[in-house]
Image (cartoon, rainbow, N blue to C red; front, side):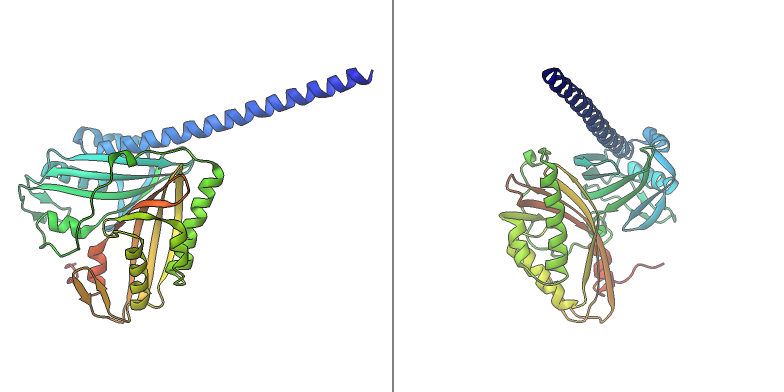
Length: 338
């Protein structure tokens, strides 16, 4: 009798565990399917910008009221499509290469390269234009994508350097930005699956660098987070260069405040949005120039991509900030006419 009762208990336990396991597997599959769908939507979104006949597809994958936030400001879908059309006409061979896409259930993030030959005038919304240079163009950008409950794109945040844009399109002369870093091996653009604990640790590490190093000046956290061979594109050749930038920035803007939100993590990759604010009260030395203090507030936003090794150390990152906006704010470049 006791043996039968014990067997019955075991049987019930096994059935319950199998049911729980099946439910967990179903949830995991649904999550994975949603993430895969988000990535496919992002790829479709980017592909449309290189083809006039595909721009209409953006209507079906974006939510009503979709907005884009970029260095040029807040833009609606109609303006986005009009801008894309102008670029396609200016560079008939335009191409967007997505280097990596990461995603979770609410967000996706991607890094891209835009290439093309500037063969026709680039006409802006106000009717002004830039004459063609006949030269190749290479622009890079990082994008955060927010999905709504129906898995449509609700909003995008794009970070790219308008200074590089202006120089390559012939709108202004080149400035000395220091020596270019060697490009990474193409094999780096791969996502390595990691545990939930590893991804949580990565998020904690990112927040620690922002809070402890940037906001409080404790550089020891940088040594803990970065691999000695770390490179930060486009300007940091090693961890010491990064620490020097933090020190110099904090000296120039003692009240600097850096915030991070959101953070998107998948496997060994992360992408996140940063906002910098501060008062430019002391001179700042950057590659190629010494910038005199203005005693005025400065704000800057950017999006970072980074990847880690098996030990959880960051081995490389790709920063996208609008240097043009920064140089205007600190008086190096005249503000554009309104």
